[in-house]
Image (cartoon, rainbow, N blue to C red; front, side, top):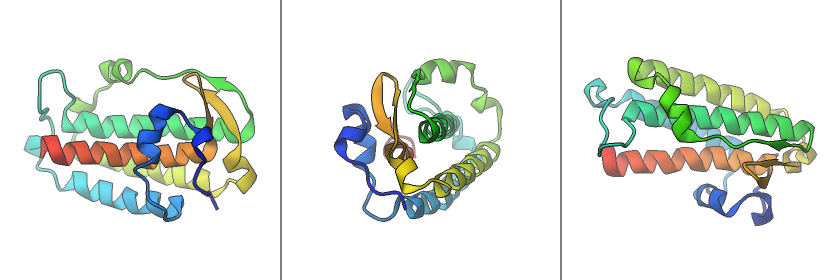
Length: 169
């Protein structure tokens, strides 16, 4: 069981993601989002996959790729912090996007990758003890607990799906 994190377990910036997540068990939320997000992207017309709502904004494919990249980073942090309390560097999403090849791939491929990453994340989170879920490390210069990272994964995804619905589709 992974309980909701306390506000001192994540940064003020991360609160915008944690606050989006409801009160159902986080593993249930992540499982539900896995299928809903996959279905959402599979339902997008492939002709709209490289659409960006403004110059300098990411395409639909890039947004999904960013969700996947961020989940990988947050899940890695959760793994590390569940084992040892250390400091990990931040990651610059724009640098990651510059090196990414999402626009060269079919949207379906990126959606399948996302679904697989989520499955891996769920296996990791299900394996944790309650004590491990409360352990903290430092990422991007801020203390963060493992359970906060689980909520941040869900909230980050929810944030970007909302932006896609409001500004892209």
